[in-house]
Image 1 (spheres, rainbow, N blue to C red):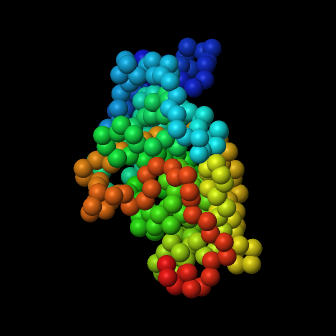
Image 2 (image 1 turned 45 degrees about the horizontal axis):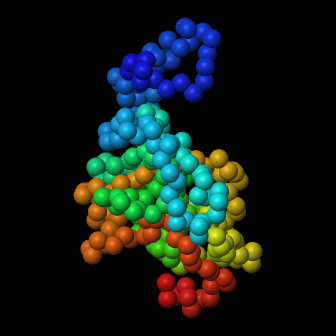
Amino acid sequence: MSSSDSISLSTSSSSESIESKRSKGRRFDEEGTSSGIPMETVREVREDPPEELAESDWPVKGGYGWATADVRSQSSLLWWSRLLNSWLNCTPVISKGVSGDIVSLEMVSAIDRVCHWQEGATEKFFYMYMCHFSQLHVRLPLDDFTMGVLRALNVAPTQLHPNSWAYLQAFRILCQSLYLEPTPYAFLYFYDTRPWRPATWLSLISRPSISRLDAFSQSFKPFKDGYFKVVVKEGGKAHFLNADGSTKFPFSWTSNPSWYKDMGMEELSAG
């Protein structure tokens, strides 16, 4: 790795320290491991063409007044391919045994926002947060249970608050330990939703009388600026798209997430 390809997030007065970091970077590239732990290598990450370096001067996209101001104004740190590539090389994103060419993981532009729709896109994509993979251990492709929950809630992956993703992941593990098949409505039976207008991140609210999972102990406040694009490639269409080409879950934010309140047993059976 050359010095121009190195990313330093902090400065150091010691040239020896800097050279040490570069040496570690070279060893990482050559061996593909860090401290004996295999690291996933991402081969398809879009580079930074010169015309994109001036994207911050582009006008902000309009027509998203249905989302709150903080959603519309939150940019992503991952609009530099080198930063995204550096993170992806240390973080598993694709499930074991699944081909990595089902998706392309791409940076966003300086004016993209997580609530933006797909106008002008030539390929279908959705956004994901870094914390989905690094802290919540989500892997692609999403399973039927996860896609079913997003579909039932009528939200995109980034529209569901990470704390609620933690509930979803914990419920799956609980079901697996009991040799049960997790289903979307069995999961949602334990929660209420109260969508806001204008739209913001949707949170699941535990029903006190039947709550079985404790709230996630870690705050996810710093997650909002870490989103990137997951572009569905030809080899991944069967995982994310129906036979008619429609998506298996909302790829983009919606202005009308589903409202759930005291779901009854009859609704659980219907689901």
